[in-house]
Amino acid sequence: MTALTTEPTSGSPAADTSTPPRTVAGWAGAGYLALFALAIFANFLALDAVLDTGDAGATAAALAEHETVFRWGTVAFLAIFLIDIVIAWALFVLFRPVRRDVALLAAWFRLGYTVMLGVSLVFLYVALELIGTGPDAAEPTLLALKAFDFTWVAGLAAFGVHLVLIGRLLLTAPGGIGTRILGWLLVVAGAAYIVDTVAHIVIADYERYADAFLAMVAVPSMVGEMGFAVWLLLVAAGRLPVPTRSAA
Image 1 (cartoon, rainbow, N blue to C red):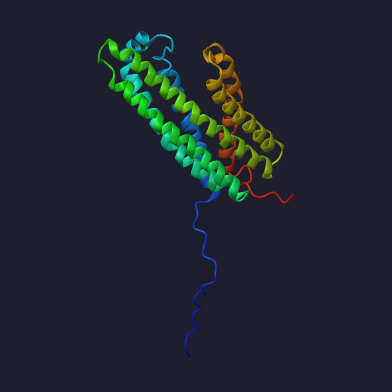
Image 2 (image 1 turned 90 degrees about the vertical axis):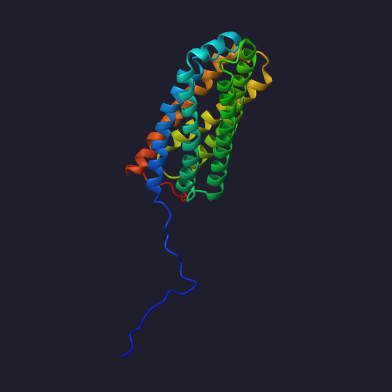
């Protein structure tokens, strides 16, 4: 008797070898926690410690005095740049069952922001190269740091659109009132990023209103993005359902 063998036909579906949604949710959540820590160090303890937008001489002197911390701050920005690429991919994998087209667009906008952040690192390198080159380097140093700041801010407009789209996906996916509140928080935070970027361009004396715009951006973004990180970790732990297309 001849043994019967079964061979897969060309039309049979291939096994899904994609990374499991709960795994990518865990990576995205852990990535967000890393971003919070890195951003606090890089932006507030390294960059803000040396940047005085109204005094080029003071900025150059502070940069020379805190060169080591500033260099590590630049490394932190580099780490943020790399981690954001992973998060963009992870969120696409997680949300594509909800609406693949919107999830892909959200990933592209986050990558657009990430590219702008990567480009802005060139200006930090220029500032580092100007350290100790003489008093004539003070103005170019300040200009390099201002160029970094605005390049990053311009990228945050794309990041804001990303948050609006992710918020829209959360509003579409089933998950209860908590998930919907989180979705609206991300929409508001994303809109605040966009408004702040436009304000940098259209308001000549933006620095006069900088604290008000900082609060407008910081409050919804900190609450929304920290809440989103917790939400991702709860999905990874199986405490919340994996996002899927709503049956409604």
